[in-house]
Length: 448
Image (cartoon, rainbow, N blue to C red; front, side):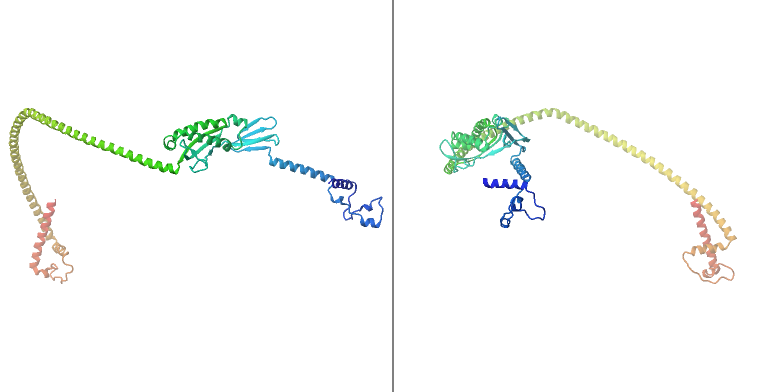
């Protein structure tokens, strides 16, 4: 090894003093150097100078520096000088030279490798459930005062107390649950359950046992910097033989309790029947006395009422007589009033009829005068214009006759004279026209 190192050093020294060959030139052998013996065999047998294939001193120094830097980086990577804690964690930093202990909860802290050691503990709530004592046939069941094995489902919830002296001193073990909580729980639970019987553990003293365990365990864990949050006792697993015996015992106790309650119920029913009979007897007596008192009170009330009823009846009779007399007088007055009203109505009706008759006579007189005057005017008009008779006849027949074909008369008479039978018909037509004119005049007068 030493020989090899010496050769490397000599080679490096020789390379540093020997110029490097130019590019494209052949390497120079040791035989070609000044002072060497130029022989053909030596030139052929001389070895190649390997110094040119090794790194220079500068390159070796840089390689050494790089190696040191890489080693430092690897050390920093494996042991970072800054350590960060997550939420809910507690960091304990110990100075190995001074022995000072510092705590921090959140954030980052400087940790110098070789100077500081850091331990991280969780402040979150943790739970411990011993599996060895859950079954009566398990590996480490509980023992009662009778020596029977039983299982218990126990749940302990705990957390570290950052203000306790043990935590501040940094004396906590790495695994708090396995090194502190589990021994404390097992040592206390086995000791407490050994004081009670299986029956007390299963039924009557469960709350008391839980209270005792929680109180003592809280004090033990507090001395080691652990806070007990809660302790719960769940299912109690009894031995199979004891469970069967307890089931039969409970069945017998339930049967005896049922019989006792049945007897008490029957006794109460007998007392209830007796009380019902006495109550019915008292109820009937009270009802009879109440009915008798009610009849006496009713008779007295009727007697008292008759004293007031007879005068009242007498007053009713007198009132009815007075009402009958008043009704008779009212009827007489009403009859007299009706007769007088009828007389007044008759006189009024006679006066009205007389007035109507006078009005009718006056109307007829006026109508006659008006008709006479109208006829005089129409006669004068017809005498002056004889063709009005033909016009009136045509007007009367216009709504009944659509077309009349007749030859005109030779004497210039009415065109319908041939149809009506000559002069006779013409005279009758004139008479009818005069009557129609009179009717029209009369109707006009009446309307006026």
